[in-house]
Structure formats: C-alpha cells, structure tokens
Amino acid sequence: MYINEILKQLKSEISEYEFQSYFSTLEYDENSQRMDLLEFYAPNIFIADWIETNYIEKLKLCTEKVAGIRSEIHIYVKEFPKDVKNFKNNKTIQKTDQILINYNESETFENFVVGNSNRHAFLISKTICENQGGYNPVLIYGQTGVGKTHLLNAIYNFVAKKRKKVIYITAEQFLNDFQLRKTQRAMDLFRNTYRKCDYLLIDDVQFFGGKEHICEEFFHTFNELRQNKGQIVLTSDQPPKKIRGLEERLRSRFESGVITQIENAELDTKIEIIKTKCELNAIPLDSETINYIATKINNIRQIIGIIQNINLQSNLNPNSSKFNIAKSLIKSYQKESIENITIDQIITIVAKELNIKPSEITSKEKSQRIARARRIVIYIAHTLTLNSMPVLANKLNMKDHSSVSKALKTIKEKMREDDNLKILLEEIQNKVKNNNIPEV
Image (cartoon, rainbow, N blue to C red; front, side, top):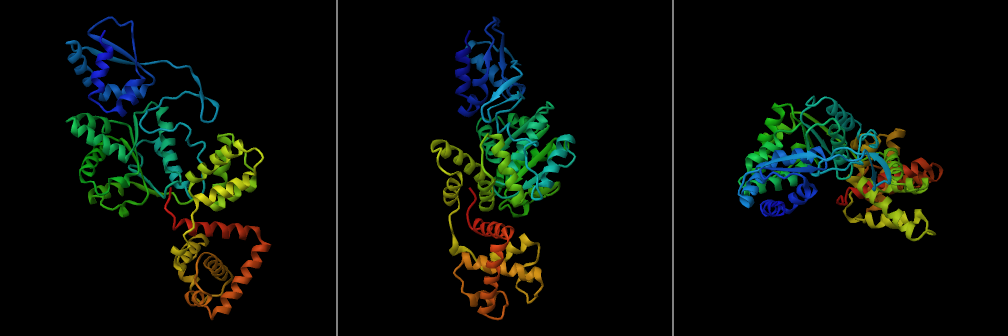
C-alpha cells in the first residue's frame, strides 16, 4: 500500500503544524486490504471530527495523485483505557476527549478560585455551558494573568464532555489559519470549520485590531454562528471600546452580548489561588511564604511561575529557606520603576482599594475614613516617590509639610500595632508598582 507516500504528499500540501497536530496521531489499519478504502484510527473523537471536516477531500486528492485511484477514507476513534496518568500533577484522572488547538485539561471550574474580582465572569461562564447561546457573545476582559484563559479552558473541559463540537484558539491562530487557507484557496474549508461548531472560544481578540481582512472574515463568522445558536466566547485585555483599530461593526457585535471584567484578585483570593496551585502540584509552602507572595504579586501567571521556581530551587537546595527563595525571586519579577510613579496614580489606586472617590482624598474633609486614606497615600508616596513633604501637602490640600510629617508618623505607629494595616499597605504599594510594570 502507498500509505507513506500518501502521507508524504499530504505533508507537502499542509503546514508542519497541521501535520504534526493531527496526522502524526493517526494509526493506519493494516488489516484494510482494499485499494479503494483507507481506514485510520484517531486518538479521540475531536481529532477524528476535525480531520473529517477539514481534510478528507485533500486526503482523497492525495491518494489519487499517488495511487491513481480516489479512495474512500474512514476515520475511527481508537479506544483508550479509562484511567491514565496525568504527569502534570501525578494523579490518576479520567481520560476525556480533547482537541489539540489550544487546551489545558488541568484548568477546570472545580479548581478556579472564585472571589469578588472574578465571580461574575465565573458565573456567566458556567451558565453558558448549561445553556448554549443563552448569553451571546460573552466577552471577558482583564489584564494578563487574572484568569481569563483558565475560564476558557474550564468551558472547553465542561462542554467537551457533553460531546459538543468546540474550537478553542487564540486570535493569532485564527489569523494564521485564515492566511493559510487564503493562500491555499481553501476558504470554504476555513468557513466550514469555524462557522459550524457549537462553541467558538477565542483568546486575545484585541489582536484583531487594525487587521481589516480578518475583521471582515470574523464579522461574517460571528453573524452566522450566532444565527445558528453557536456560542461565542471571547477574551481581551481591554473592553471593546478601547481596542484600537477594531472595526465599528465588529465592536458593536462584541458589545451586543455580555461583557464582564476580571480585576486583579484581592488578597484573600490570591492566597487561596496559591494554596490551590500548591495542592494541585504537590508543592508544600508555609503560610508566611504564601502570604508574602500574595502581597507582592498580582499577576497569577507570575505567581504560578514563582511557586514552581521555589519548588525547583528548594529541591536543589533542601536546606535553603523557601521564604528567602521567594524574596529573591520576587525581586527579579518586580522591577522597581519609582521614577514613573506619580502622586495622582497613588491617589487613584488607593481610592479604588478603599472604595472612595479620589476627590475625597484631596478634599479638606477630616472624617476618620478619609484621613486614613490620606495617610496611606502619604506613606506610599513618601516610600515610592521623590516628592517632598511640601509638594505632598499642596497636592493633598493639607496645611503644610508639618501636617504631612505628622500623618506619616501616625500611620507608621499604626502599622506597628496592626498587622492587617501593614499587609494592606504592602498590597496597595505593590499595585502601585505593578501599575508601572508591563505584565509578563
């Protein structure tokens, strides 16, 4: 049989990524003796469906070129043992179907830590899993490392078990596939793929901004999917109105459904996230180290990286302190940029954290709540900026530099007496720093 030659021919007509992702996983049925019928086994139903939807005609053309006959091709699903070893967390898990576009089976709703910062996005994500098209589209936005991709993976994991046809890719992958199909003059294939699924999950749609041709194509994909009750879930680092270069008609489509923001996790949520990640990966960390990491870092991806590095370094040096390792690692993650920090930025962040208006902090109001906020601004500005006390007094509408000095002395005394205040100040101070540091 000419199987190797047929696959070689196919490999010359598609990208290396496509071939390795789908066809390198196939097994040919050696018992099939018919020239007019080729039978293959795929590792799961999604790869089988993907190949049948997107590549069967191309495979048939390749058999015709190599063997001189246009064979029928059948793709079956190979049976796997029910239990397999998950090498990521060293636990035995149930094998589930998966697609090899963008997927992480360890990120589920069950291990997503819910807090005030992400609760709405979490509930919406669970709702559309049970009620396809109930809210359509759903756009989740927020800074890098707040959990958007975790929710996409959780949606994928949930609906894949219900045997739904789901595609999960990044906007960049969508663009690359579009350009590839256009070059191959195979746009019908592209459209049949993305417009005939139950769930289309696309990460980082801000990547569409300024790309006219892909905006045009996605506009029509969007319309047809929604018309056919296909669920669309998108993530972005910012709301649609702030995505530069996004076509107005596509912006209006994004805004026609549910838009929900995930903010930086609050301290308690970050602590729970660290505990959960440690448990999943069997990494023991003491409370002091966990609390220290949570107060210093906002980006969850950075937090995960720090946890993994602590584990690696402590395994290499068993006698070393995990707390000291954490301190050393965080210095490399959190570069200081004091010269870029302004008093206005500090006022804005403090006001948001304490749920008051920035104008209240700069007013002459002397209530206990506002005075506390003003002292926090003074402490952080004194620590992170080079502004003099007279400058701070002028900015905060205080009498003179002696008032600033007195407020600074008061909050330092309160920090020595109140550990919770100290933790709060450390957290706000690091949010101010992170506001001037590009997310990783």
